[in-house]
Amino acid sequence: MIVLVLVAACSSTPSSTIGEGPRLVSDVALGTSEVTDAVPTRIISPTPVRTVTLQPLEVISPPEQITVDADFILVTPTLPPSKTPTATPTISLTPTQTPTPTVTVTATTTFQAFPTSVISPIVAPVAQPRPVVCDSQWFFLEPQPAGCPLAPPSVAQGVYQTFQNGHMFWVGQLDAIYVLYNDPALPRWEVWHDEFDEGEMEFDPAWPAAPTDNLWQPRRGFGQLWRREQAVRDRIGWATLEWEVPYSVQVQNEDTGTIFMSDPDGRIFGLMPGQASWQLYSGSDEVGETRVDTSGSSSGWPSGFGVPVPPTNQP
Image (cartoon, rainbow, N blue to C red; front, side, top):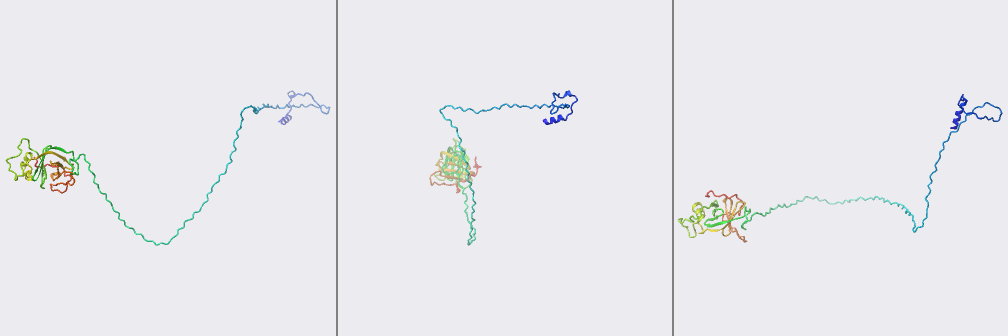
């Protein structure tokens, strides 16, 4: 920098005005007494140098160690030495060759197998009868009808009388007379309305006498019907009892249409639907008791034939 300033000062042209530059103070001659023309010399003042004052750095002194008398000993813990890792051995699997099984071919004799027919028995299911559970119970133990009673039995005042070829029942609750015939002609039984009124003549004394001593003209309602209806009289014959037998009759209807009624001896009469047949059973539950069938039918207690239809000659 100083060299450049000096070169610039030497190459510059002196100003015409002497008073503007620096003034000569004294001339000094070196080694000669000759006085020469003085040439002014420019004096370049030195460039000021910036001085940086450094602040003293803060010196941190180590803490003072103070020794204090105490009853304990200060122990500085020391970390245990780290464990040196041990290399884990690596197990390498060595492939093992499995020997291929060898098939030994042995010459054998082969027989052709023919199919064998097997007959499997077919078991057919057998229908088991289911017990019938009825809402009402029959008033008799035997027989046990296939159907159920429509309602509990009705008990009413009744009258019963036997004839040469049949039976007559009077059911007071219905005011009806049931006539049952022993012959196979149809209808096998009939039902008639009782026309007898109290106070009327019970029998007709003018009626011809019975052919034998053990036969009688029926009385009251039975006698009135018997004398009035010749077809009834001709089929049923004379009464075999002189007097009708009063008793409490039980009547019960089956859901198939059969009417069951009792007689004074506890026997059961079954009047089949359609007036096609009637059957008599002893009504006893004793072992060995058999049914007495006076209707000529051997088919047992048939199922329903419909609703009983009164005969057309009913008054």
